[in-house]
Image (cartoon, rainbow, N blue to C red):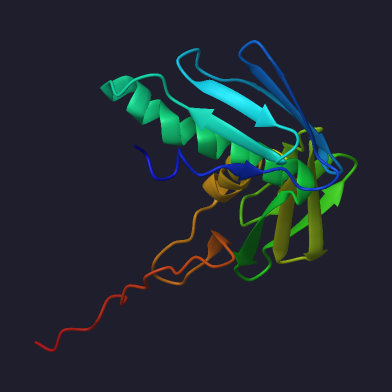
Length: 182
């Protein structure tokens, strides 16, 4: 049996979980999330134990593959509405900066024009200083995807390290051209 799939998911105080058909709804202080899980899985919510259990009906390859995935996606929903998720990005380069203006993220990153990105309504983007960006939200997938979209505009280059990178990302630097004596 899947080691991740058989772990029960604790329901923290302040989080409400509803189960209807193949849809699970989770609401908490950080927001509301809804997901329709695969019909092969069985989800049981135990109110008295304060746990969610995900079970699989058989040991076929497809159900084994979905078991741990379903459990982890439900656990991410519970954690997202309880604590939320965040991704930090840093901007490196002379004159590179970012700011939030009226629901849009404005990036000045070496192009001849500023890059404007629409911030999704269920995400919160903060710019604590001009060279760092923090993306927060309840949905782990949306937070990660928006942070990846920001990084994709100007990924870090290996020679000078200029560009947008994740806060904890390590960029391998290359040596530049060297003069060959000849």
